Image (cartoon, rainbow, N blue to C red; front, side):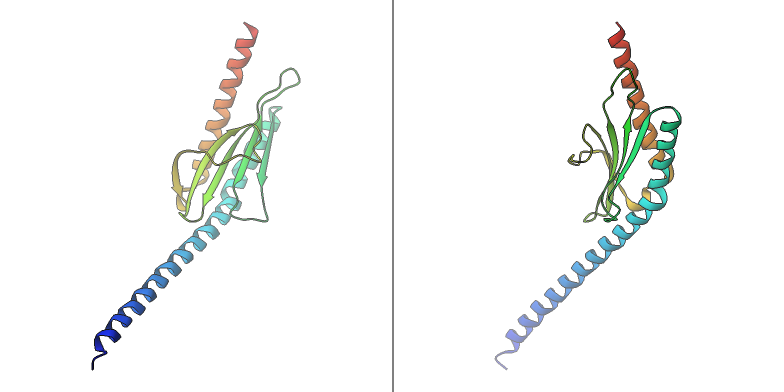
Length: 161
C-alpha cells in the first residue's frame, strides 16, 4: 500500500513516454508521406515543365539544362538557364525547387553561377507539397527567364552605350 503513489508516478511517466513516441512516429510518418508526394510531384509536374522550358530555350537558340539527382527522390531539382550567344557570354542562372522534409514544405530559389554547389537561398514563401502545381512551377520558371532576359537586354544596352 505504501507504493501506490510510486506506481502511479511510474505509470504516468510510462504513459507520457508512450504518448511522446506516438507523436514522434506520427511526425516521421507525415515526413515520409510528404517526401513520397514531393518525389511524385517532381516526376509528374516539375520535370515536364522544366523539359518544356528547356525545349523552348533550345528552339530560340539558347540553352537550358535540368539538374536532378535521380537516385535521391527528395533532392532539389534545378532548371539551369544560359542565355549566352556566340558574341557575348552570359551568366548562368538556375531556379531550384528545394524540399524540406522535416517541415514538409517546398521553396523556390534562384542562383547565379555554379548551381551545383550553392546553398539554399529560398525566394518568397514556402509552399506545402500540395500547393506545387504545374501552373505555379510554370509561373516561377517563366518569371525567372523573363527577369534574365530583361537583365540581359539591359547589359547589352549598357555595353552598346
